[in-house]
Length: 467
Image (tube, rainbow, N blue to C red; front, side, top):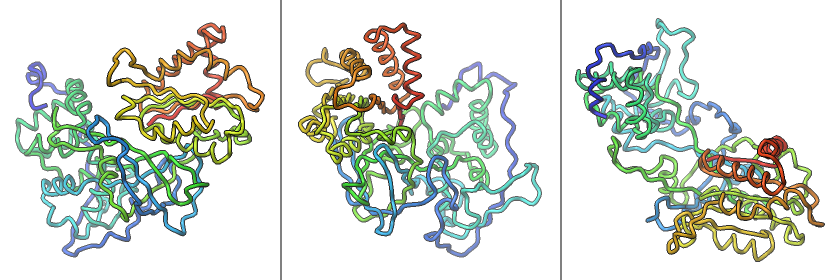
């Protein structure tokens, strides 16, 4: 991070982006300003979310696994306010409004010389004369608030700085040596080092300022160039018919160590904040717009769910929406019918990483699920038993092809496949396995199998969700 390749250091013709012109003025007054009644982010809408804000109180935050494993799993339960009118279905998600940490905000404000003025009235205006056409205050920034409010609730200080921001930070750096290195990182010649040392390392703005101590950006430049702090979505793991205005969510606690240029240990912004919440604390949420990943998908709203075969594939906390699926099926008394419903659940190992094991097994005992595959990628004892969800799907290819091509007498509708995971790679691996199953067990060529998968996707009978 501090010293580039010799070739880059010797390059006297760095091609750097043109620094964007500044267009905002920030005026801090001497009076304290109360931001408690400010609408979140100036009332600005969020793409993919409904506009109504739901307020709730934390009922509990509990551990689902040991905190010692690589990605500990936790659960949060929230009670919505009594007057909240809410309607959601299995598979739906809520966005949590998440703040930046006070420590990081205070560090940035101290670096730019305004920590003592953090809670004073701040007025943001557009410069009367500037070179930028059609300029306006970003819609998520209030005209009147405080520096603490804007840096806590409006600006994403965790996301790695982009090259346009680095270009401006270089101009705000006193040390010529540090300025040169920042220019190298944002240059066309230094794009590989930028990718490696900034993007892939996951450096935050705080990390960057710690690594380049003579960099002191202005308030205006940070408001202009830092991205918007967006809320984080989490799938509901319960149903309103049983839980009412109480809602349950599952999340992984992500660790980031102080290495590779990261200057302090931290958790993921959202998961770290959720884990610290105490009973009675208030949260604000937005309901995510309904998607295809719903039981049933909207185009199949006429399906009798109790008589619809299902194949559900997931890993880790992506089990959450399927827990709501299972609750819905139990509520509909789906156990009365001999319908094939299978769950393929990828975990590190059953002993330390299998969340809601009892609920899954109860669904088997009560005939809600006809089959479960718990796929351990890091089994404790027998390494030869290592298995991913795609391995289990391949092993049961014949059974799966039967579900897709043949109906039992109690099955009134064609089967639906749901795949939920935390990476595009996982979704691709699973899709490849289904193509192989279609080819091997439905006697189709690879092209015909791929065409069949596209058909299932088009008809919302193969539905994917990525976290």
